[in-house]
Amino acid sequence: QERKIERVGSSIPIKVDIRIVCATNKDLAKQVELQKFRDDLFYRLNVININMPPLRDRKEDIPALVEHFLAKHRYSATAQPAAISEEALKRLMEYDWPGNVRELENVVERAVVLSRGQIITSRELPFGDHEADEHGEEGEEVSVEKSFFKKSVSQFEKDLIMKALRDATGNRSKAAEMLGIYRRLLYAKIKEYGLEGYPPKGRAA
Image (cartoon, rainbow, N blue to C red):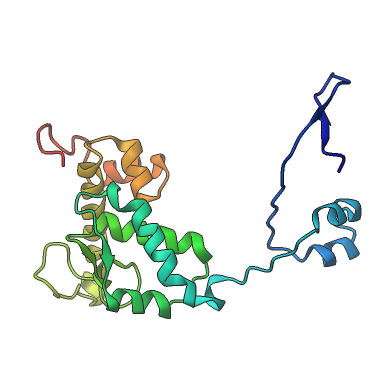
């Protein structure tokens, strides 16, 4: 408030010039009424209030966000895709995004890791009925028959982990980061699929 601070244990004021940006998914005015948030802190912070709707209510932002996340993550993959197909973008626009912008970034990063060329297609997206077998021909649909569903999903997961390990040249921490999962989960999956020595020396991407 006075644009001055004092270090702990010191009585000498230090001038500062800062701006504080706060974000919340709560109605702070309501929280103040319920005495769950300090009113004095609320009035100090509430200088300019910007309401940011959830992604599902501002889908017109999706193309720009996809372009940003694509540029951010494309160099983490071997193919380094530079664009997204119209069909894939359409599917992103149709999705409701319960996980908001963070979920969108994770989906784009996953698509980048799975990409086979310069353009991300709908097959690299984790939702819908479009996913194709990693080892099948172009456009070949994953079998959704109940007797093969579990096997298909497991094979897809194994292929994804193998690709991440190749792109990370065997560095498991980096592979886990590329996949967006915790290292302990990756280690468990590596053991489950018998990939302890993967990729062999000389075969990394």
